[in-house]
Amino acid sequence: RDLTNRAVFTVMRHSGGWAVEHEGAYSDVSGDKEIARAAANRRARAAQEAGQPSQVRVSGEHGYFNPA
Image (cartoon, rainbow, N blue to C red; front, side, top):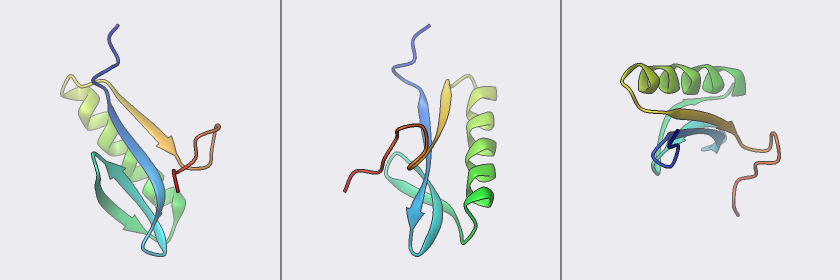
């Protein structure tokens, strides 16, 4: 299974709140981390349904940190 071309949706701090980052673009900005996470999951699910392997990451969780 080739995951090198997977879509990665990252929930991270942005503009004083949380947002979903994908390929350098931010969307779904919210003051609530869980709302942003749900949006990332919806985007990942849509990508999967379109045949694109995908992954959701959350900055600061599971050893993943946003680069400074």
